Image (cartoon, rainbow, N blue to C red; front, side, top):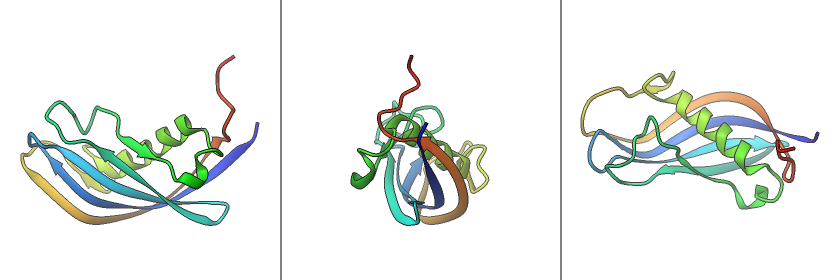
Length: 125
């Protein structure tokens, strides 16, 4: 089974509003594949029906990688990397409780390596 190694480098949290009716998050995750640098946007849309801790976040794969990577695994790995850095149980920015918290332009450097399947390889049988 052919794999691709992702080397996560950092997160730049562009904006995040937490604990308000307009809770949202927009950030970028930076990583390398075969020593080439990439970035992907991650976001949670505005709205009171979304929970930052529980609802999935949107992950936009870089255009050059879309046909190469298993997107489902990529999305899961990016989300896990982000949530380990920014959440109620995070090691970077811990958010738990509170109202109307607004954060902008935070950089969290946290190297992490993982691997995912190449495109076309699914776990189905």
